[in-house]
Image: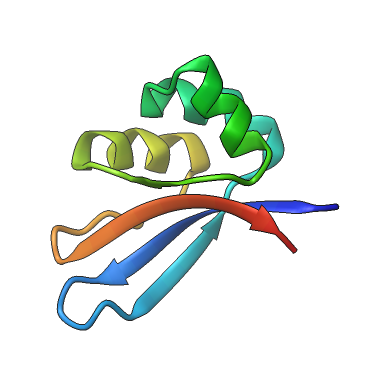
Length: 84
């Protein structure tokens, strides 16, 4: 089973999915630190369980980690993992 980890960018106006950013598996430890996850949260996310909201501070750090720009106050951000 392959699990894809993504940051999903949604419009606050109509909740449309605007962008999906893949998170490389080798960055999961850094992501967990940025998100402030417990050991249980880390384990669940690595197994593709759970959806997490991303705040502005976390988004800015994740942009730096992933070398991608996606934060805007006009959008809501979530992180998820799931089987593909």
